Structure formats: structure tokens, C-alpha cells
Image 1 (cartoon, rainbow, N blue to C red):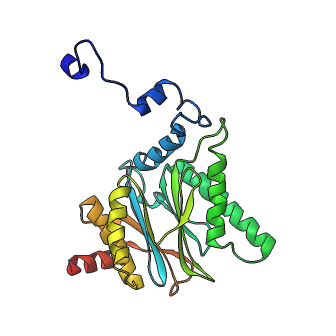
Image 2 (tube, rainbow, N blue to C red):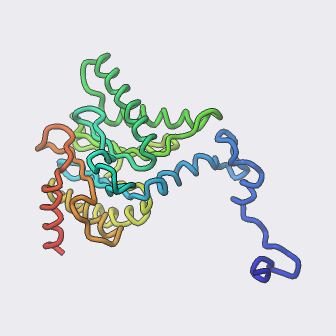
Image 3 (tube, helix red, strand yellow):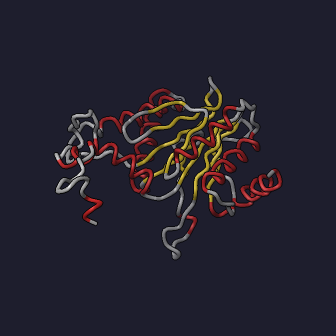
Length: 264
């Protein structure tokens, strides 16, 4: 209504800073800073991670393992569910959980595999996960500097059992920022998921493999406000008791869901 649009007779409310930046065209090019020092196109890439697939992912580091859990949604009922995944192997021992645009995820995974393969060929041993995270982040950072490119609309979580430091979890965002984490989240409800994970980490528990899996699934269930079926989620794990990066079967996921239900 007219009365809502006008804050005084004949006067429109002042535009917000974001609206002014967009009106001035600061979001037209990825390389142009707005007067507030923001790169709007990079911020839009973060929104692509949140909104493109409408899924939420979490990852949690235990004392001898790292677990990644994400929702599994079929965009079309006619699709074969076996061809929908957000979990990828970069090397046999490094797993990756991608949240955001699936085509971008696939493209970035292939770049990461290429980097990992070249490193092993040159040095004779597998690329450390922290170094791979930095290499992927470098790709993302370059894409914020060139007008003829756009950032990858994905958030990557990398996990592995490092030879020196043990269980390792790293997250790489579309802007090329990478950090090591005890637990992290991405996607539609990432803020709520971070709050749920903070409560788990704050307890400073020495989580076993089974406990880590159940805490991660439980955190995602709490955030989504629903009880999952085994086909609703994907679970990937690296552990000292397992060889390489492993995806849990629906039967294994069902066992853990039952344990969570009994615990609650």
C-alpha cells in the first residue's frame, strides 16, 4: 500500500546500503569493490551454496576419525538415486563433501584430483590434506580477481587421517578461504548447524568412531527438525580403523539411526 511505501507525506524511505551498491552497479562485476569494501558477486556465490541445492551438510572430527553427513535429495522422481552424491574421493585416503552447485562441485573435484595426482607423481607420496586444501583455496581466490571468471558456487569439506597430525578436517569456501576445523557446516541452515556442533565440541568429548557418526547425524537431525530415513542422508568417514575414505551403506546408517532413537 501507498502508506507503507512512504514514511512521510510524499517521501520514500531511504534505500539501504546494499540496495544503493546494487543500484550503482557494484554487483555487475566480480572485480569491483563497493564503497563498503565488499565484492557483491563473491557474496552471491555464498548464497549459491546456501540456496542452489537446498541441502545442509555437517562434518565432525572425533579422536580417531572424521565424519561428514549431508542430505540426499532427488531433484526428479525419475532419477536413479545411486547417481546423486555429494561425497567424492580426491585420493583413496582423502574424502571430500561438496555443498552447493553439483556441476561446479564436479569440476572442482576433477581439479583437486589433478593437483593430488601431480603431487604424488612429483614427490612419491600422497598429498597432505592441508596442502590440498590450500591448493583448492588458491583456485577459488584467483576466481575472485578476474572479470571473465566466476567463483565456484560450492563449499568443500576435506577430511583425511594425516600421517603427522591424525584426523584432519578442512573447509574451503567460494572466496578461497580455507581453515582447519574441529567441526563445520555448510548449506541452507549452516548457522543453525554451527550452533548445534558448537554444543557438541564444547563438551570436549573423546568421541569414538560410532559416537562421532551418531553425534554428526543427530546434529543434522536437530537442525532440520526431522527424523531421517537411511535414504535421506549420505555419510562419509575416514578413520584409523578403516582403510581410506569410506561411504556408509544404508544398512550401516540405519544401525546408527536406531542407536540415536534409542539414546533419545
